[in-house]
Image (cartoon, rainbow over all chains, first blue to last red; front, side, top):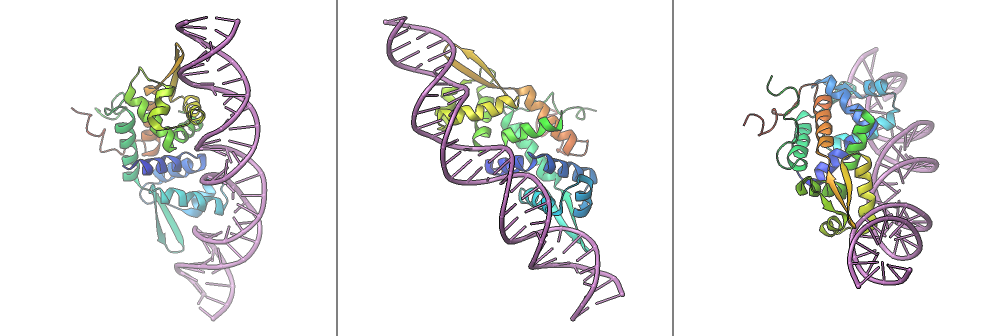
Length: 107
Length: 107
DNA sequence: CTATCATTTCCATGATTATCGAACCATGGA
DNA sequence: TCCATGGTTCGATAATCATGGAAATGATAG
């Protein structure tokens, strides 16, 4: 992954509200969540939420899909994978410095 | 890992110069690298480098150690592990959304 | 078409960040 | 002690970011 893109994605997640949004969307799964619901869940003003969603979308970490009058946002898991893979390869000396794959690898 | 700390570490890496510094330090390994060498390698003014090193140190991603007249900075691999683990658990729906541990898991 | 609801865009504001020259502090050798 | 060298802190500046009210847009139902 391009270094510029890595920085952009890290920056997108490096903000409390945006990280909260993303975590919520991960929880929500591929179906995603309407903008209004997100705003409600996190107590954000519509304009503020929109601003953050734009950041996340622009970074490629979330996707938007219109459904009726609502706009559903969902996490882009592949993008997140790429980011984590890049960090692992690129910032852990080639070999993952993880205790190898956390708790879910060999079980 | 605390969410505040996660945000702080993401923010520390979400800047081109700082990501560059960190990658350099990962390459340098546990021995680390003197501040001057980092500045030289990345073409940063001393004050600018110092500013970024402080960010990284404060986020717990790098460690400083004085050696003679030099100050050696090194990547804190454990901290990076924690960050990646947190992102994996927390932002990939509990189960890592990675194609499972990249290329290095089962080999 | 119009009314209405969901969301975005526009705009202003305050806060934070990045940069770097200059002054300062610390260490080790003459 | 005094100097040279390696780094940091201070201070100023410009740029970017976060926030939310108000107005505009887009979509749908009636």
